[in-house]
Length: 403
Image 1: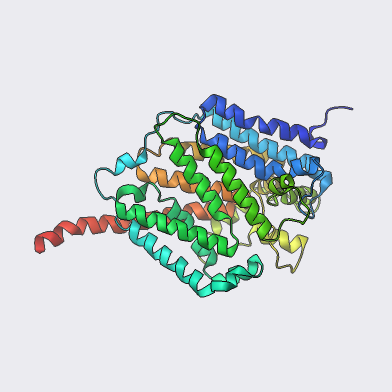
Image 2: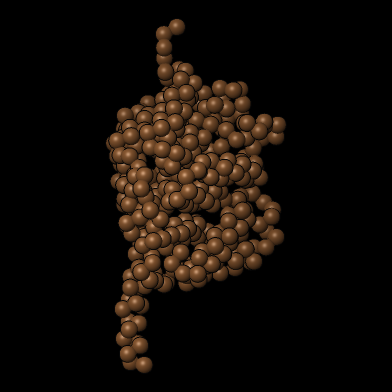
C-alpha cells in the first residue's frame, strides 16, 4: 500500500514527538519551547493517540478526517521546530530580579494584587456551598458577570511574578493572590491556573543557577494529573475510561479541526485572514465580533448552550488551509523566542514573556481573538501600573521637601 501520511495519523504523531528531543538537543534541557511542544503534543495529539489505541474521543469528531487533522498538527510542530532551531534560546539568561535591585520600580503592584485577592475572596464567600454543586456553567453563573474579566486580570497579575519580587510586601501579596486565584478556579471548575503555574515554573527554572534536571518535568506531570482530575470532576470524563484515555483525551482540538476540515472549503469558503482582522477589530470598543467558538456552535449545534472552544490550528486552516498552519505557529514561536531572550533586560520583558506563554497555551485550544486580547489587555494592565507608579515616585521627593 502506498505511503499516505493523511490516512495514517500515527506517522504524523510519531514525527511530531521528535520535536521535543530535537529542541532539547539543539537548545539544551532548559529550552522552554521543548516543554511547550510537549504541552501541545498532549492536547493536540493526545486524542489522536487515544483513537489509535481504541479509546474514547470527543463526541462528534469526524474519524474520517483524523489523518488530515493530524497532518495539520504536524505542520504546526514543523513551524515551531523550524523557527525554534533558527532562533536559539540564550543560555546565559540571568535572573530578572537583579534588575530590581536599584529600588522600587512599581510600588502599585502590591495594591493591585490585594484588590484582586479581596475580590476573589468576596466571590468565594458569596457563592459558598453553591460552588460545590451543579455544572461548570452553574458555577460560573454563581461567580457573577465579571467571571471572565477576573480570570483575564488574574492571568495578567500572575505574569507580575518577577516584578512582585522587588519587596517583601509584593512577594507576600503575590503568593496570597495566587492561592486565592487557584481556589477560585477550583470552585468554578476552570483549569486556567494550570497554564499559569506551568508558565511560572518554566520561567523560574530557566533562570536558576543550579545545573540539574529541571523540575519542570515533575511539575508538568503533577499539573497534568491535576488537569485530568478537574476534567473528570467537570463531568467530561466517561465512566469506564482508562487512566490513559482520561489523560490523553483532554480538550476538543481534534474535534474542532476535523469539523473545520470537513466544512472548509466544501461548505464554508476560506476566510483569507478575515478572522485575524476580526480579532483586531474586537479590541475596538463597540466593534465586538462573533468569536469562532460561537461560530462553531451556531453551525454544529444551533441554539445549544454548550461550548466547544476552537483551536489555533483550526483557525489557520479556516483562513488559508494547511499552508497557513506552519506560518502561524512559526510567527508565534518567533515572538515567544524574542521575549524569552530578553527577560533579563528589563522587568517588563519578563512580564511579557510569562503572559505570552500563558496566552499561547490557553489560545492553543482557543483562537487568535482570545490570544490577542490577553496580550493587548495585559500590556495596558502593566502600562497603567507603570504610569501610576512613575507619577507616585516623581511626586514623592516633592512631598518630602514640602513637609
